[in-house]
Length: 256
Image (cartoon, rainbow, N blue to C red; front, side, top):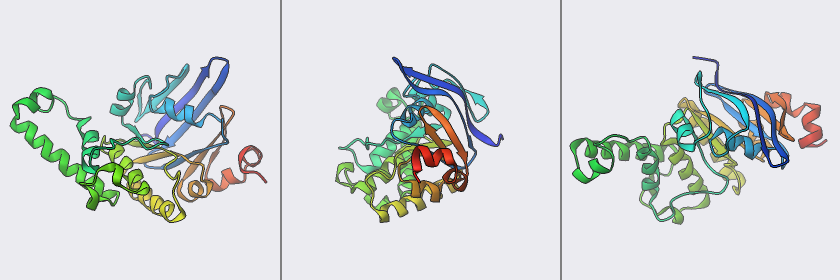
């Protein structure tokens, strides 16, 4: 296995005359927690959307688990092993917590016995798949510590629990890389500390994590390495200590 899970090389993206990404290269190590930070308008969201298949880059080479892939389709990227959450929570609001996670599990269910025809025929394999999906979904709810709310309708959950549920649903697709878009947004200090512990526990299961986050304190206390983006380019990369003391980062983002 390569030391690096994800490699991005010479990636660019323009929106009309605006250069959002300018020849960006970055690497994410296997089984690591990596951060992506930078000032507003730096291109973080564009890079994040490129990695997860929501925006097609103009150029670039992408390797995941030593295999080249083209991030031009959300479904292809997900099946390659990358799953994401969003800054604005996107749950199925009228479904229960358990049903939300099961939707993620169904994404990987294929074949005549587990598809529409299997559902209509209620085949033995379909029934077994449903049991397995439900069991795994309950395990994921336990991992994010909301198993006791499995049958709550998602829009009745607290804000923090909805964040946890979204992470559980993302994990249901069996990713090797979990990409989190501002997971601590709107959280109080206690919730942020609980989130930090949760992400460490998820990482210990072997899942690599990449997060965009404005809370620098959380990033520096959680991530093993940090990428700093400014004006569409990576201006610094390394350990939290290295990045915090980089004059370019201080000047562009952290301030004196």
